[in-house]
Image (cartoon, rainbow, N blue to C red; front, side, top):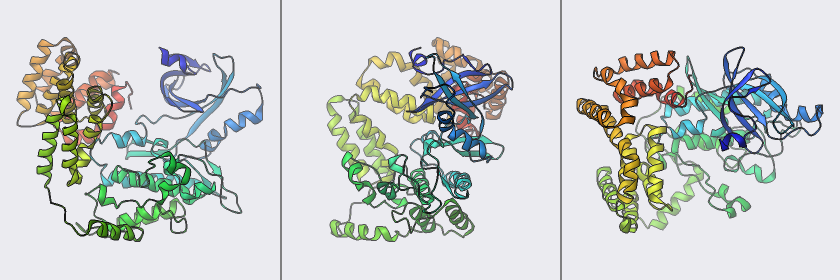
Length: 523
């Protein structure tokens, strides 16, 4: 209840007699976003409410300044731009007049949520390319204006991810910083999020190519799970030193990428030299589409872009050509397993930390998969952090292996957690058995035993046993849809989660929708 009191609108209230407030979606310094349902159209929308109230009711200049974003979004009707449908003012509980506007509700969340949903795995390359191309198409609408318009705050949190008949849809949103460039200089004053800002930011300049830099940073991050120019300290912020770093090749972080042309496209987009960068969204889109049409060689080591050559030479000198011992992934995984066993005893934390570091030292793939475990171990409260990460891994990523792993480590360090989360651990172990065709019968039997012993599991899963015994994922999917038609998202999500365990295609089809269903959202 305390959360509701802190927001401008109250859940369950009706705004201006036609928008019923269903859910608080989030907010920032200037506004709050809610999911609402139009009581006449019976359709869901998102509304953005400005926190700043209007001091003088009827001050048309003030109202117009606050509605600039709505006016701009209403102007564009494009698949890859969030559209505004209505705008108005209302008197809040504080007695003040507030501005709001109504826009498309995109139930999938933002690109940051989508990226995190893959957990330790990289977002598949084809997904990344599709999303970046779509954002290029939306951004090109702005860049093609006369004079051009710039977004100035391209980042994953300002890219919404939804679905339509064609699959994933990426939509640009949060146009609060959009500005028309000076028609003479083609520049605008710089705003936006620092980690995605080009060097021109330091001179307080933005133009269409700085939008491309921000999109290039997003491109690099989706491919590598890293920022090309990480900000490590306040000193970096004051001096701009983060932009003087040399980004690592894509393959350094993501061993699955072996493509010189693709890497050159990304590094051109994030070039710190604005003259060498793509100048607008159309140029980046053309480069990606040209790459798609070309015959890409397989298993070819990427050529390091020219900007990286000096660093590579320095590495060779500093290493003095001393070869590091080669460690296979299986050997490194064995070291990780030993580290996890050490981590079960708080007295051995220091040794566990060293063991993780040793495992990561020679195998980048293992580091990517298990780095989070080391970070948890080094946190201020490892057992509590382990439980949080276990719940997050399953709720958001459907990573039952990680969930079981983290809970078992948490129980070993703090036995009191077993009473609270022991049933959840056993349920996740059932899911791991059900996921494997050779142990699915054992998993179903174990789930049946759990429903007879645990009231909560019985309440949630007893209705699934007859359907589950068929071991037919598509039957589970059909039943899930039936419950969805009855607006029972809870049972629908339970059934589809079981179906996803048994069928990879179903998992790929519903993995993102499942999160919405668990929140009670039908999309």
